[in-house]
Figure 1 (spheres, rainbow, N blue to C red):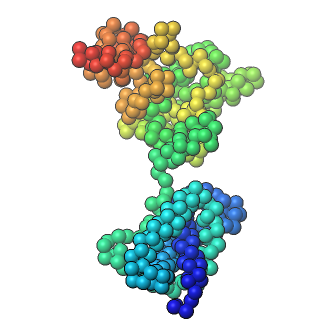
Figure 2: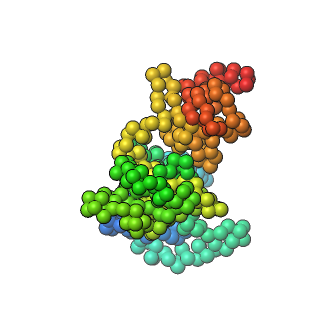
Length: 430
C-alpha cells in the first residue's frame, strides 16, 4: 500500500466514507418506511415498491447485509486513514487520524445521511433496494452464516423470533392513525371510521329501544284499534303479540299491510298469516357481531332477550347504521324530543333518554356498561327513588329532578357545567 499515491488513497477514503453514509442512510430509510403505504403501492404495480417490500419481508437478512457492508467500509476506511497519517506525520499522526476520522464519519456517514433518509425515506429506499437485491444474492452464504450465529446467541438469551402478527395494528392504534391523519381525510369520513372502530365496544343493550317503549299490535285488541295502528304508525315494521310483548308472535311489514288494505283483503286472519316469526338477539352482543348476524340471517329487526329469555328491548339494523353515519333525518322531531336545549344553556331531558344520546348531546363519556337511560343513572346515584325537586351534581353538571311518577324519573333539568372552583365547593358541601 506504500506504493499507492496519497492522492489515490484520499480518493478511496472519500469513496468509502460516502459508501458508509449510503449504508447508514438506507438502513434508516428502510426501517422508517410506512409499510401500509408501501404495500398499497406494491399492490398497484409499483415495481420499486414490490422490490423494497420483498427485502423488508426478511428484515434479519437485510440488516445483516447492511451491517456487513457498513462495517467493512468503516474498517477499511480506518486502515487507509492510518496509512495516510503514518506517511504524512509518522506515528504521531495515528491519534490525529483517529480523532479526525471519527468526526468525519459521525457527520458525513451517520448524522447527515440518516437525517436526509428520514426526510426522503421512500425515494432512498427505492434506490437502495435496487442495489441491495443483487448484493444480497452475491453475499447470501455469508449473510446466512451471520444470521445463524446471531439466532443462536439470541436463543441463548431467550429472545424469540419476531412474529408477523405483532405488526398488525390494534383498534386503538388504528384510531390514532385515523386521528393523526385528520387533514388527509374529510371530517365526515373520519368520524365514520372512528364510529366503526367503536362498534366493537358497544353492545346491543346500549342502543336498543327499551322494553317499555316498544310499539306493537296486540291481537287481543279490537280490530278497529289494530287497523288504526297499521294506517297511522310511523314505523315500517311492527311487533305482533298477544296480551303482552312476552307473548311475541313476530313482526309484520306495513308495506304489505297497505297493499292488502287497498286490495280489500286485510283482516285479522290475513294479518296473522303474514307475520314473520321473531328473531331474538342475546343481550350483550357487540354491534359488530350483530350487524353481521343481521346480514347472515337476512333480518332487519330483532328482540333483545336476557339469559332467562325475557324481552329487554328491540333493535333494528337502522339503529346500528346510525352509530356509524349518525342520526337519520327521517324524524327530526323524535330525534330531539328527549333532549331539549333551553335558552339559558340548560337542557330539559326525559328520564327515558339513552345514555349514548346524552354522551353525544353533552359531550359526556359515560360508559355504556352501566345504566342505559338517564332514569337508571339517577337511581344508581341515589340508590333509591329521588323526590321531586332533588338537586345533585353529576359529571360536573347540576341536575334537578323536575317530575317523578310511578317510581320513575320523568324529566330532569341539566344545567351548564360548573367551573372547577364551584365544582370543588359543591363537592365539599355535599
